[in-house]
Image 1 (spheres, rainbow, N blue to C red):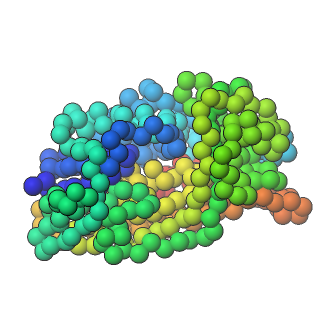
Image 2 (image 1 turned 135 degrees about the horizontal axis):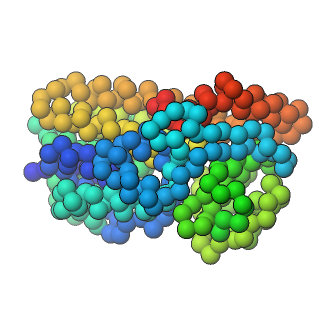
Image 3 (image 1 turned 135 degrees about the vertical axis):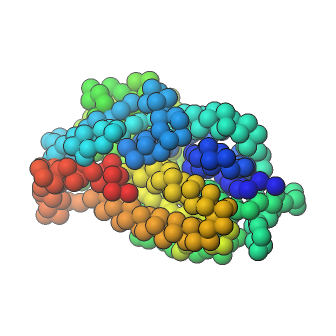
Length: 372
C-alpha cells in the first residue's frame, strides 16, 4: 500500500510526487491521460517557484530550456506607460522564466522516474474517495480501489477528489474570456514581456523558446473557432502591432476565480487548481500550486510520522496565500478590462504612478510573486 496517492499527473501533482519521493515517501500518481499534455497554457515560472524546482533538482535544466524574462513594459495607444525590471525585486533568480508547460512536465516526469520509476500510473480514472480512520480508499472507474494513508487532489479545477470530500468550491468575481496562441516572434522586443492596456481590453505578449511569442487577449465573449489570422487582426486593431500568425491552434478559454473552503480534510489535501482557480493574468496558477507542494511535502511527511496538526497548518497557510493571489489577480483583470474616456485616463495615470520608484520595486515584487 502506498503512503500517499496523488490524483493528477500535471505539473503540480508531478512536482509534489518528486518532493515526496526525495523524502523517502512511497508515492503513487494516478493520471487519467494516457499521454502527457501537448498543450503549453502555463509558461511563466516565477522566482519563488524556480526555488522549488531547484529543491527538486531540475531548475538548471529548466533555465537551460527556457527564456529568462528580465523586464516588462506596459503600453497604451502606442506609448509606454511604464516599465519593470524584475531584478529590482531582489532574488536568487532575477527573472521570470518562460517555458511551455509540456516541457516543464517532461522534466518533472524524468526526475520522478529517477526517484521512483513506477510511481506514475496512466490511463487511471478516479471516481471517488472514501476516508477511513486509518487510511483512504481511492475508487477507480473499473470498480477497484487503491488504498493509501493519504490522498492528494491535484486533479484541477473540476477536482473529483475535492467533490468527493465534500469541500465547497466558492466562486469569486465574474467570468472573463480570453484567446491565446503562439506566433513567430517578429516584435523586436527580445526577452521583454509586453502588456497592452488598450481601450478594447488587455493584450499580453511574452517571449517563448525557439523564436516564438505567446499572445493572450481578453475578449468580450467566449470566442470559439477563432483563427490565427483573426487573432492577429485583433492584436493589430488594439495595439497597432502587426504579427505573423503561427501554424498552431488558437485556444479560447474562460476564467472565473474559485477558492476551496478547505485545503485539507482528514486524510485528504488539495493542491494547485483543485484548491484555487486563479486568473491567468499574471501567471500565478501553476506557480501557486508549486508553492502549495513545497509546504505540503513536509506536512505530509510529518503527518505520516503522527503529527496530527501538520495538515491543518498547511490548510490555513495556503488558503491565506491563495486568497491574496486571488485578490491580486482580480486587480490585474480589472486593470485589463475595456475602458474609455476619463476612466482610461485615470487607469493610465495609476499605471504611471506605479511604474516609478519606490513603488516600481514593490510592483515588481508582487508581479514575480515574492510575497507568496
